[in-house]
Image 1 (cartoon, rainbow, N blue to C red):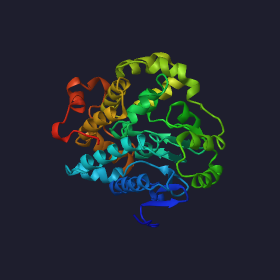
Image 2: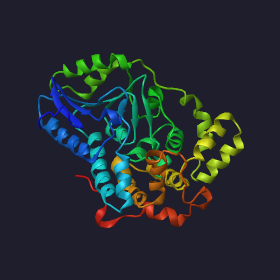
Image 3: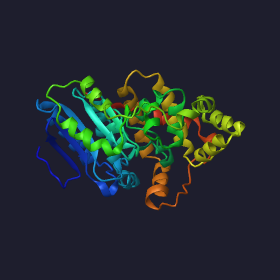
Length: 355
């Protein structure tokens, strides 16, 4: 594969590093189906090349690694009962699983904005670098969706109920909180990323994961917890329930400024999306692998793609930008077990499978 500098994805070898650069800076590198396919091709090439010691994922421009998937195109397909969701999520989730198991060190520069599909390309990496500029979030519940791309796996492995909080509220993590939530491994000052990048390209062939980790250690600040981590005792008490009704009741009873602000945030989200998210997070806690969670997410994503809430959430946030979605149903209490069941059902021949 040749390097195409002006394409939406740049893949090339620099020294010992196989560089994968998301290259849509005007869209904060939002990822399309073709870009996922190009990442897959790049990984094929770099895995087979003995001169490539390490993979480096980065984003073009100053705003961030990746703002997520190309949600507008998915919305357009959903409106006409198209099949883009079925195709894109299948290929994306298989890629997410491949990244986690990739045999060479895979370093992700999670600088600036990192959301949705960008989390899927970076947070499953073997070496995850955040910065003083990192704003990481999984805001899908605000779109009538849920944290996918292995988000349920990642969030369910955060300490205490931190993952439940981030998954349901869509709140943003800074770099240290991303480490506390187990979405990242090192904070490196953004101004030092070029220096670290240069050092990665100079690694010797055959370098192992521990060697790459020691290299990154030399650039890291040592920070491991941010402002949300300090609220963990309160978050554990408020979000330690298996039903959304109980979480809402706990927040209403609490009365603190934090609880009231959180309640206001949740009241803006899709009731159905919150119920689905909480159920998937609880199931993920009992899952032994990322693949198991991705299979469950794929089943639920196909149901979301057919739902009015997804179309309405994207309309309000991305298309019309009025920030005033009309959710169906409008209240948590109105989300019935019958509504939830299709999100968890096996889908037969279309089931997600991994090599």
